[in-house]
Image (tube, rainbow, N blue to C red):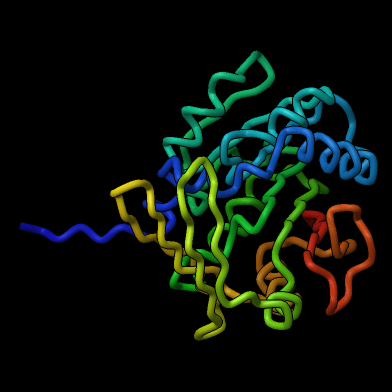
Length: 245
């Protein structure tokens, strides 16, 4: 019998516990951020936008409400099933591995939000993601890449916390190992006990720019938070705006 090995994200993102733990990420929050971001980008109405790793579609829905033609993709079947109820003529959702090519020279903008990157063991897989994004963009297209700030994570790591939601206990331990932030998540749901992990590579800005350069993407600016404030080593986020050459 062949042993099938599953990546951590295939298991964790497809469980209802993941969506419960992060249910503080609301549609209202998404609406506010997307409105601010689109005002900054000055993207024309009816533009084609790809929400890559869309989850249950909060940002895709917000984009669609602003008049954009939106496609959301995610690896999680659970997430896509949840998002699909919001589909219309200008909003579609598909299950897709982010490393896979998708609609060459098609989109005016691609968004990859809330640290939906850096999951793979091999850096070449991350490069494949950037290549897929670059290939999908029209010339002069925009790529918005929202990632954790490596310095902020290292300086503000909370080693352990306990969270209770809907009478379900989450015990979370974090550590930094081999240039990755690793989160061990224990879930106690009555007499059901489960364990999951999250593991994200800690990319410095300079390394991400090198990957982008290989894939014909050039940085225009970088923001440090969801209010689009200035970026520095104390910023909680690293929101990079790239332009396809």
